[in-house]
Structures are given as structure tokens and as C-alpha cells.
Length: 227
Image 1 (cartoon, rainbow, N blue to C red):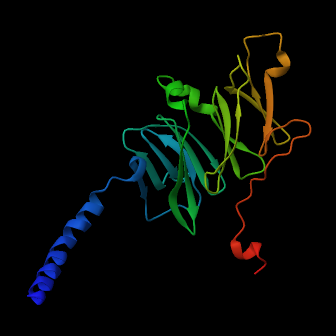
Image 2 (spheres, one colour):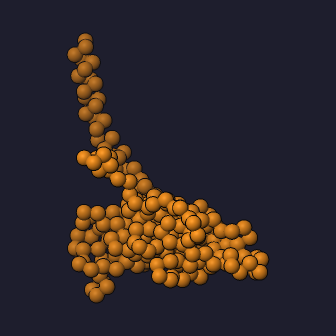
């Protein structure tokens, strides 16, 4: 009797395998991602928004190396850094498509609070939201309410800077001076002109006596122990 039960259980397990496999293939991609990597990747590539996709292509021949879409979303802006392509989407999501060990993949996604509503109906606002911070390795996302900085290697949120009360950051009015990002922060109180410009770098707002945290990747346990 026990042998019959074991045999029936084994048969049921075998019959269930195709159903499990089918369910795994039918599972939707996270965040609606659709990354298509083409076999003949060009030696040199640039990145652009084209229709509903972000694509990497050879600027001389036009040959594409990959295209990236998200179901029901549109890319509004891209910014590149060595080995990375950052994209801002219509739902307020920021993504990083990066090359790791010669393989292109979507490394991380970060949803920015309030950004989708601010962008709705006015995609031109997205042009300067993404700002690379010098030295390389950090990406700033500038919105009216706050500036948030993410480590490009893993998307870790390193610091945020909220706008001053009665003020709002303006992503369309930024400047760079010796590696420092200067962002306009218009305020209702026009007399307080000294508060209408904010300077930040990879470690946050530049201010006298600041003691910011570092942004390096956590050290390996073995390295920390001196192994």
C-alpha cells in the first residue's frame, strides 16, 4: 500500500513539473521590464530615448546593442556615466542599465516620491532631473521637494536634502563649478536671496563644519577582518 502511494506521488510530481515551469515563464517581469540585448553589439555606443524605449546604439552606423522598455511607461530622459545608463520614466521611476562582466542588465529601480505627479502632462520638466555628481559614482535626482543622491553601483540612497520651507528646487536651473552642483531654490520670500542657491556634492549639502557619511560600497567581511 505504501509503495502504491509513493508511486502515485511520484507520478503527480512529474505531471506537475510542466505546470510549474509554465507558471514561472508566465510570471510578469519586475516593474514591467523588457530589456532586449541584441547579439551584435557595437564597439562604441551612445544612449537615447526613442519612442517608448531607451536604446543603446552606435552613433556612426546606428546599429543598436540593446533596447529597454517598461510596460505602460515612457522614458522621459536619460543620463549616462561610464558603464551606466540612467533613465527617468513617466511613473517617477529611475532605473540603471549597466554592464557587468560584459553583460547588459537592469541593475536597479528607485521610485521617487511625488515625481510622477509633477511630471504628469509636462514631460519637458524631466530634462535636468537626473544629475551626475563629481567624482563619478553618485547620481542626484532633483525634484521641487528634495534632492536625493543614489550610489550608482547599487542604487543605495545615500542622502536627501529637503527644500527649505516656502521654497522649491528648480531642476531646470542648475550649474556646475569645480565639481560642485549648484541648484536654484526659489522662495516666496524674495528678500532671502541667500537661501535661493544650494551647493551640493557627493556627500550632500556643502556647509561649514559638516561631518557627512562616506559613500563607498561596504567592505567585504574578509577584507574587514584582514583575511
